Amino acid sequence: MHPCSRHSSRPSLDLPINSVVRQPGCCLLHTSMFKRLFGYSQTASPHGFSSTSTNMSDGKATSVVKSEEEWRTQLSPEQFRILRQKGTEPAGTGKYDKHYEEGVYHCAGCGTPLYTSTTKFKSGCGWPAYYDSIPGAVTRHEDRTFGMLRTEITCTACGGHLGHVFKGEGFPTPTDERHCVNSVSLTFNEGDPVVQK
Image 1 (cartoon, one colour):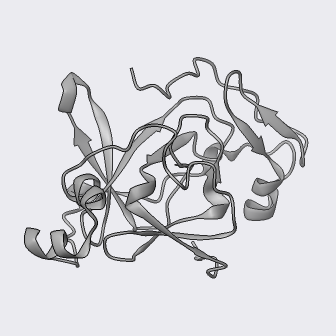
Image 2 (cartoon, helix red, strand yellow):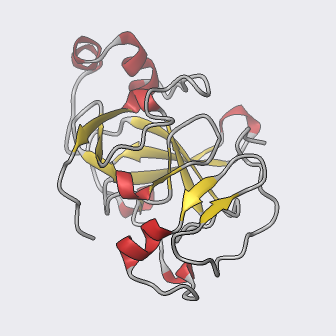
């Protein structure tokens, strides 16, 4: 079991706007963010939202293609290990884990915008967590490493490894997904314009 898969029951989503929701053991989330983003009322259910990341079955080729040597030259050793060799940074060590400034998170490999700060939430798992990506920016792949069945997420543009996505953990977000992303895979631009869906 992934260390962040702590939630066994789904919390109520009928919450007062501007309330703070605390999940047992980890999650702290301001629900006013969802009203600002999606304009739904206190009793509206966000279950109609769906993920905007794509599946590898879409057959889309990456648009940024470089040799292994070019990637090694461009990236730091740790960025290369994570982005190109599918590594994972230790929990709680990434600079974007507890980072909540407004802006856009980009792929550290190619600069493609991946996530907005408006979809980032406090999951308590030790890695940056987002409930959705910028449309088309992230691709999903089946990952059977370490004897587990997981869903890997990569940058659609360059194929760089970002982390994994987990669904159904009970976080009170519009998608009930947690994109668990390595900070090393990201850069941040403060005050970037909001990417329209």
